[in-house]
Image 1 (cartoon, rainbow, N blue to C red):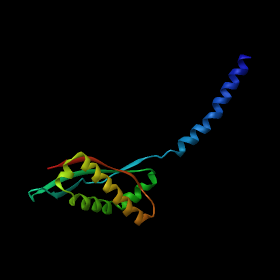
Image 2 (image 1 turned 180 degrees about the horizontal axis):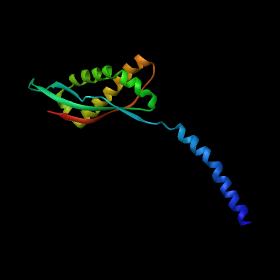
Image 3 (image 1 turned 90 degrees about the vertical axis):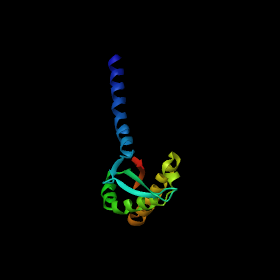
Length: 134
């Protein structure tokens, strides 16, 4: 009787493995691409002086197969981010809420540009991993 129960338990565990492996295949395999070198650009302060912002930007994609496309369009991505940042006021650049709004604006703009170029949404997330202003 014990051997029958043991055999039945092993059989159940064996049958459960393919379902687990199949579920793991459906989850995204996130990959990251870092724009290099860091982006250094300026913005206008309240006294009409120039302030400087240095960013390191990491782009998250849901599929590693998208990385060559993202790398190919890196100059377009870099230009869009620089354009957005250079239009921002000092208050927005220096606040945490403003920084998040800028990040979201960059993600939306870059995704729109990449959709126009590749006909697919490549980016899952755009991250500022270094954010230094002066």
